[in-house]
Every structure is written in structure tokens, then in C-alpha cells.
Image: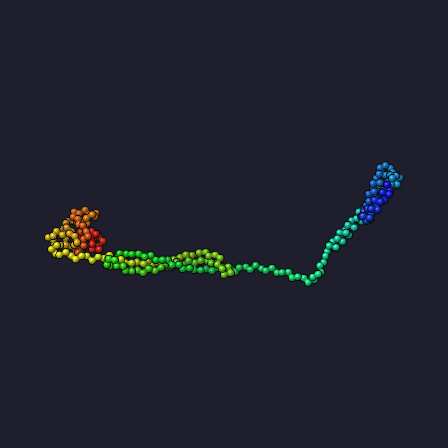
Length: 256
């Protein structure tokens, strides 16, 4: 038994050093001392009395304390050695390499300008009748002129390139002048009838020609809204005074 214990102590000492040896001796002594105190003796390990067992217990505690101290110091030394051994200095290139400077992202140059655009307003064409011009004649009475509309924009540029356009005002600076064309409507009346045909003895009013307008209290155009009592079918040309108001539009031709 004693030989086995010695062999165990030698193995522990060889593997763990003095700290482990003292720790194992302390543990073994503590166990043997406690057994001796409990039974009064431990002959197997040479303890013959409780007094000796007390001394063995005290010695075991001291041995364990020293063993723990040895193990703690060895562990710290091993850690420091590992830390020192892990530092590797590469001196293959002693010249420091310059750190590349990052290329800054350029900020776009932003400008705002006001731009005015002029747009034409097309004129309209109109026609008016003119009884002073021969029928079918066309005369330009008023020349047409386009109007002008002014539109103002706020234009944003970035590095000279347009990125947005906003309308800020829209006004008409000049109204268009419409083109007016006069269209002739005058028709030359036929020559008056011979005196014998238009005299008072014929029963036809001499102020009219082309058709016989009876001499009566009132004469209206046939098919019209007049209430007579006499009627005449057209066309009738006014060659004198339109006493029956047959030519309502004043173009010289009645009941047309």
C-alpha cells in the first residue's frame, strides 16, 4: 500500500511539478489524519494516536496551501509565456506602406435659374356681310395677329444638366387680333319697268319691279307671317320707296 502511494506521488510530481506533489500529499495526509482522529489511530499509514493525527491534518493543510500557491504561480508564468510567445513581429518589410486616401464623392453643383418662354396665341378668322360690296366680293377688313403668352419656369440644374422645371407664372401679354373678312352681298336691282307697265292704271305699285305689287291698304310677302290684305310673290325689287316694308334686310330685294 505504501509503495503504491509512493509510486502515485512520483507520477504526480513528474506530471504536475512540485505544486501538484504538495497538493496530493496534502490531500492524502488530510484524509489519513481525519481517519486517525475518527478511529484513534491509522496504523496503515503509521499514525498511532489522535495527537499524531492532528499533527498530520495540520501538516496536510499547510502542504495543500503551498501546493495551490505553486500551481497558481506556474499557471501565471505559463500564461505569460504563451502570451509572449504568441507575439510575432514580421520584419520582412520594415518600410511602412502608405494608407490609401479614399477618393471623395464629388458634390454636384446645383443652380436655380428663372426661364421665360413666349408662346403664340393663334388668332381666329371671321366673316361679316357687307352690303356695300358686290355679291361674292371678299375684302380683308382686319389682318389677323397672333397673341403672346408668357410662361415663367423655375429650372434646377445639376452640373449643367436640367433636373426639374416648375411653372411659376402664366400670363397673356398680348391678346390676339382676329382676322375679319368682309363678304359683299349687294346685287344690282333690275331696271324699272316701262311707264305703261308700272303706271297707276296697271294696278301695280310703281315703287317695285320684277313682280306686280298691288296697290292696297297693306301688302305682305306671300308665304310670310303678314296678314295682308294683299300679297305678292317674290322676288320683288325696290326701285322707289318701300312703302309696304317688304325689304326687311335693306338689300333692295324683297320677298326673296
